[in-house]
Image (cartoon, rainbow, N blue to C red):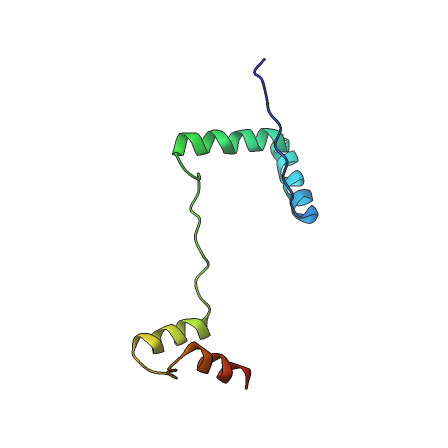
Length: 87
């Protein structure tokens, strides 16, 4: 049998319960799932899925568009901007 090593990780208990439920339906335990995940990282030479930020929400998109077009409030310093944000 192959030698093994232990991995310790802290995760949200509710998330762990959800993962346990899904893996049980698949006939896997967490150790087996982690091993599959690690093997895929080696095979793919990176994460085996795309990792990206969610798209910005509507107000953020509008603010970005306004900034690109030179519209909106301009500040001469960050101090001025933070002072304005507090008011």
